[in-house]
Length: 188
Image (cartoon, rainbow, N blue to C red; front, side):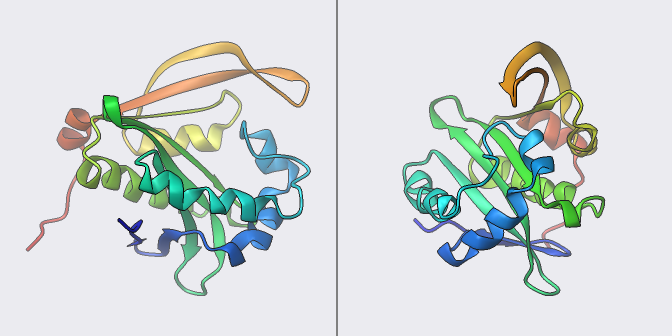
């Protein structure tokens, strides 16, 4: 099975390609992105993005998740990444994303995440999607609340990042809540 692509009003969500590697390294390689994520390296090693991209297709084929390039439809610019890390046995996934600093404040994270949450529930048959962010990442907080996620707790000093312990805020959204609270377009 091939990983799908999706279009939203302003975005194309598609599988990453090896040629996206240099732009991933440029966008994700800034300190502001690494500071708000647990796994994005800083400095970002040259060639690491192509290695990361090479893991996507096998991971999708194994049912472990789907990672998408977030691309602006108007000009084809790569603006970030978004994905679901799936635990199929429990029909749940963790939502993760980053948007490049030049594209902050434009609603791209909310738009992309809304589509990926829809995909998770409607196409993958997930029952639950959860997400987390460092407590000081108020941008991610706003995105998750807009999408109907509810806070489930704070893990104090949960992660060590760049030499300091960071509090992590956890959020969840179930299929039932999503179905009751999300306006779905009429298919006709």
